[in-house]
Image (tube, rainbow, N blue to C red):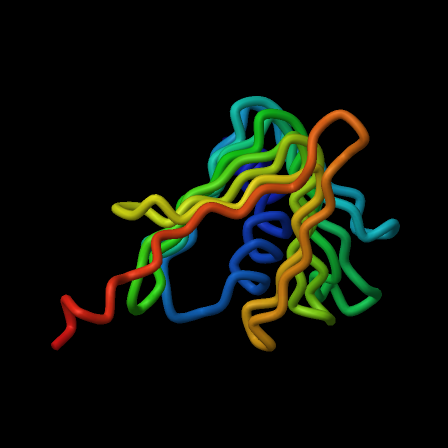
Amino acid sequence: MTHTLLKLMPILLLCAFAWGKEEVLQVSAKNFQSDMKKGITELNGEVVVTKGGDTLWADKVIIETDKKNRPQKYTAIGNVRFHTKMPDKEMKGKAKKAIYDVAKDEYQLIDNAMIEEIGKQNTIKGNVIVFNPQTQEASIKGSNQKPGVITFIIEDKKQDQ
């Protein structure tokens, strides 16, 4: 048991370093595998990653690191879903694949992607959704079979007065 824990320690430390030090990070999966020389850690089978009020679910998560074991890219594959709490709203979403580029602080949701603001009818749907929380820039691409769609509620100014 101790030997197994020692093998998993670099994976868990990598995840904790990647997600920050201030909040508790919990990672669960059926299988954990890490190749520190290649800088690749794979989590397979019913993967759940939770930090603070944020949760990611996927069939598989791949974490790519640089030579100093700093995370560079996260890729979640298969039945990807997430829930996140922001200061002024909660969001949930899904896609078949999601990529987070650490250097760019950019998220890509790929293939049947959807983001929804909880408690409102605000949604974004597309084949590919790319967004950057820092710059608050986003782009949506549809496919030949299905266009990108944005649905939102316009609040009536009369109600504010």
